[in-house]
Structures are given as structure tokens and as C-alpha cells.
Image (cartoon, rainbow, N blue to C red; front, side, top):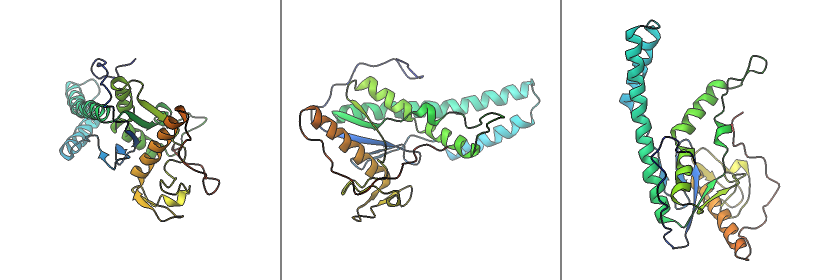
Length: 242
């Protein structure tokens, strides 16, 4: 198992034994929304650091290649980015430990992050589209620590992390199960066009992820999975950009 730059793989954390299952929806605006309604955010670059990085990048652009000045500027940029990485690593450690201690099962979307963050530049024959937007999304996904958080959860809660197919999780009403893209009013708001249920969009998705995991657990025990038929044939959920 890879360490992805974090500390050595720790001893598993015992399950609390409450039987509680939590759904976790990863996003860019909110790093992780829980089905409990809790919002978790990875630390981002501070405003002062953003301004300093911008100044350093401008100096780097003006510095001559191979010069001592250029070397000093690059070292300063590396130190700035390393501090951000350390804060994100610390957040991943604390968050994964907290979730492993609080919940018996942690359900997450089965996202192919390596595919989502693949280079958007393309080739001369097949140039990429929306390159700038994709690059921004890629940086946001990596900054939110999506892959690191789940990998660390698997280290600390082995056998207790369920990966759920994310299809339609953001378009499904958690109350009536109606699926409609129109219900996703905005990045933050879910307003069901069928029953009027209103919730934070990420929390609604996290609840759907949790309910799917609950259904899997019930079915594994010989019961009937939760959830009923949907109202109509759903539209495809656009999980990836491009």
C-alpha cells in the first residue's frame, strides 16, 4: 500500500460498535459533506500566502534561467507550497481518525480521481478543451485531499470503508427518491422538483451515499435493500468535466 507522502500506515482503529453508517460526499467548495449534516473543509492557502506566491511567481518570470536569484525564488515557492501540503496532511490525519472512531461504516463515492485529474492539455492532433477550467478543477480536487482522505480511512478503518457508485447521487432526492438534474438548483442548494424537499446539495448527496451503503448492508444480511423505484428514467449525471 502506498504512503502517498503521509506517515507510516497506522494500526487499525477499532470500530465504535454503534452500527452507525455515515455517507461522505467529496466536493470542491466543501471538501467533505457528511450525511449527518457536518461540513469538513481542508485548509486552503491563506490570503497572505496567495499574495506572496503571486509576487514570487512574477519574480520567477523575470529572473534569468540558471541565475542564483532564480534558484532562491524557486526555493521560496517550494517552501510556501510545502507549508500548504503539511496543513492538508494534518487535516487528513485528524479527519480520518475522527471518522474511523465515530462510525462503524464510512461510505464514500467510488471516484476515479486519477482519471478526473488527468492532464487537460491533450496533443497537437487532439488538443484538450476547456484546458484552463480543467486545470483549475484538477488543482481544487488535489487541494481538497479527496484521494488522501479515503486512502487514509482505508488504512485506519480497514474493511469498514464502502465505495459506492456515485451515479445520480447528486440528482436524487433523499426523501422521495425522484431523480432530476433540475433539482440541483446550484452548487449549494438541492430543491426537489417533485416533493419540494430542500437541503444542502452536498449533504443530500451524502445521505444518498449512506442509504445505498445501508441497503448493501441489509441485503448482505438477507434483508430487503432500502430505496424504492424512481419516478422516471434519469438523465446522466455529469461527474467529470470533459
